[in-house]
Length: 254
Ligand code: 13P
Image 1 (tube, rainbow, N blue to C red):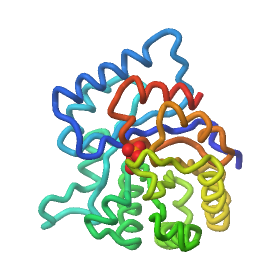
Image 2 (cartoon, rainbow, N blue to C red):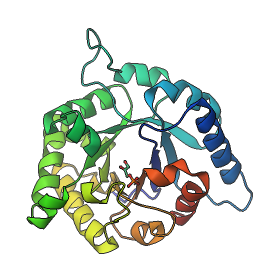
Image 3 (cartoon, rainbow, N blue to C red):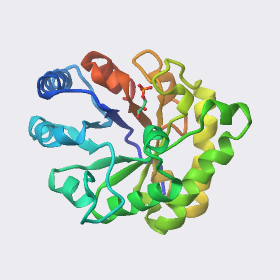
């Protein structure tokens, strides 16, 4: 099974935006990718906050940009006030859902098991989960990076079995998120290689699984990161909120 040839670049807008700001951002992105000289050879998604999914879906209609969500409920339906189910996201044309972002692990107490269940819910609804793993600065300094990302991944593999070939993985070192401190291409590649090997032990289709890098990826460092053999795209935070920057990252992934 050969490597998925198309990179994936996804913008995680986090808790940012408004009706007006989203409209301006999407219009600028669509104008940018519509330019005749713009050569977009990667898959692209944007992940707005849940209340704006319907708006952004409409804005993106008929375009080459897919819609993603930032989270989904571990439950199927019922008395879970505030939760949004995978089926509801599917109803709104959501193609990808970020699962297990470190901000949710940290602030909402999501565990490896919660993340694994959410992955299962997403896959069952026909949504591609973008499963985030990554170590904190302390864990890196203690030499625990490999142990941590493997532990986070193994919970997902354990619960999802052969379906694991349908996921996207995002390696996001926590110390690189929103800090301007990017992992070096070598640091990122070495963790991506660990994750690839772990996937290979779980599925014969591991080469097909796209492993994105996330953490202060920007217009200036994207090309070098994306040139690494096991980096199959990017999960972009801050730089996804500025159309010119996000467009430059898309161009760098060609
Ligand atoms: P930044 O690109 O702002 O560092 O955020 C990365 C991230 O958390 C994407 O999910």
